[in-house]
Length: 92
Image (cartoon, rainbow, N blue to C red; front, side, top):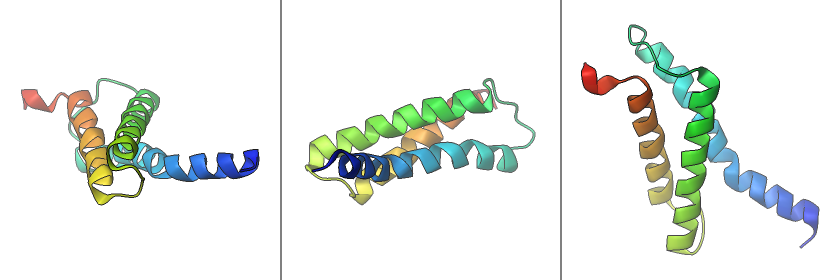
């Protein structure tokens, strides 16, 4: 496999993690306007992206290939949990 092909595969593998990490804090700000977040938007995206990459890697390791819906559901759960922590929703 050529290096450009490998880069293309890795970027396409990480694309759902990036999009979810970028969109989740934006949508959380639209839905919960009254709640203030503890961290900046950039930190929220970075933490969510890191968690999403971890879940994608664990899904690839556990199932042996990517693209399983259970992996994507875990990614949404991890990202939503980080948003819950950032917004301190346990205090509400």
